[in-house]
Length: 492
Image 1 (spheres, rainbow, N blue to C red):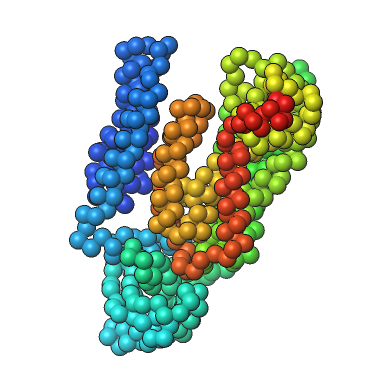
Image 2: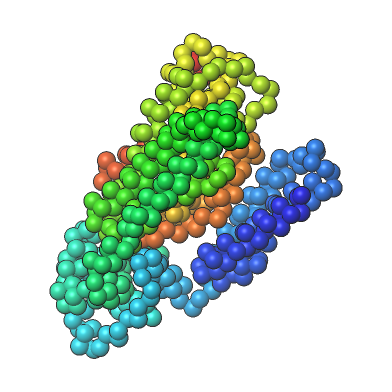
């Protein structure tokens, strides 16, 4: 069994790395894969030699994991230094990736000498003193010295380029690896389309969104039926039992749908083309793998990136709290067993999470004691999963909502460092609390590099920075266990 698990894990890991990592570094993928899989090899070898009952020393796995992650990081970034001009290469790649999701690559029409003069005239010396222009297959990079506020400079130069070249280019403003901001002109995929209105209609597909929603209602209702204590076979005798699964189904779909609608409506506010939320129904597990939207146009600036990213977790969390409180109030108190898992809805230990413990105490009051566990009502199960979804999305890693948030707050380079540290901390936490191991593995596959906004230089205001820090505090309140001092204060 261990061999087959290792084989499947190794194959999936290699395929995901081949898809996401191979384009970002020249270090051989097989070498990075070997380093990343070393802890799994050691753990599997230990199990084969000593058996499943004798666990390996935690300190051994911890140190091996830390060393392998550091080695992986060094090899990855060493590979990024191999090109002759790594700064230009990585910057051009990041700029191209910003429009990769909107259309297929479009060749940049060579700028003639007369046009280059026009381009240079778009950069007033008092705003952005241009020093040189570099040409790439899919980008024109303009480097110089910023002489005024970043937001004002971007808007003025963007207007100048649109006046001279129309809608031929998208204008991107990024922070360079040397700390100096630079402009990139990439082909505007919308300029190639003959009918934007027709294309806009295509991406909505309300029929598909409705079909997936109905399918997810059915799949989550069947799962909710089991959570409520019934078997699917009982439907043959009494089909009305089907409705016993609706409290879980509707609660979970409301949370997931509100999360995605938060993204969707905020994207619409900033005139970002986005699809409707699409649910993913599955006939097992939780009844769904969640929901998603796809944005088909670049994000204009870091404020929009922040607002679109935080709107989803914030909206989902606001809906989760009353549902969870109601569900907890209608749950039953049971004796705390000796060994329970985090996702055991029949005997959930509220002390697994600071926020869960506080909400449980508010809902159940003095009934909840030190030796109490909670047999969750189906709505409470949906609310608890809502907390988990919120926490997972707020992880400050790469293309998760939390990764977008720290990118908007601190910039791309700092966000990559925060993402690496978060991965390592969660992996270390998984050796103390096994339920986080799956999260840690998932985050290893999430790319750290996030797509930049068109204006990726202008910083956020203080209110957004504060809201971003509060979202990270919320993440900690959800994933950290209840401290003993607070447990004594709450009498649980």
